[in-house]
Length: 224
Image 1 (tube, rainbow, N blue to C red):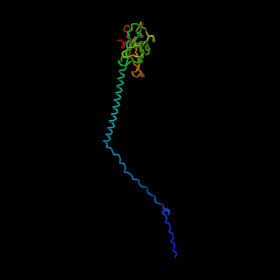
Image 2 (cartoon, rainbow, N blue to C red):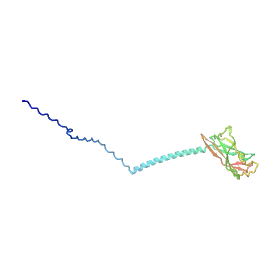
Image 3 (cartoon, helix red, strand yellow):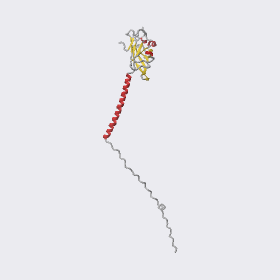
Image 4 (cartoon, rainbow, N blue to C red):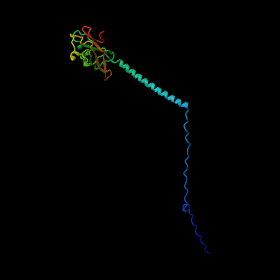
């Protein structure tokens, strides 16, 4: 007898072909480390100690800064006190007008020369003349040693102040009461030692025409 063939078995449907959706896989949870601990709280005593330490450092910086300023100021004052300064005098005049007199200027500094020296005369006032203070350049300036503008320590330069020729002031043989209480002074300008680009300016003390002297002369003190 012929054997009967068994019907082929139907293939099984997979879950996807059966219309059922596959379940979504949950993402693997990341391992989280331990949470950072909060910063330790400082006590009031610690805060006061830090504030005191910071204040001490600020005070130290301020003291250093002030000390540097004091040193710089001291050096500047010392350098200014030893700068070359001219000293003036009136040359005794036997004849002629005191308003056309000769004067001397001496470099009193024992260390520094006066380079680029320029001298000017200032007629401050003449009583009863109504004249305003006037500056004129000195004439007949004679430096020692043939120099043209440098006055070494201890050296003396001579110069004239031609007030009479410029302003028509009275000559020596006229009444000096017209020029009584006349006052002049001198202005010098010269280079600062070691720094030639900076020039110093110096005004002398006032000089008064002393008519009690014969012949009258310019002195640094008025008549007594």
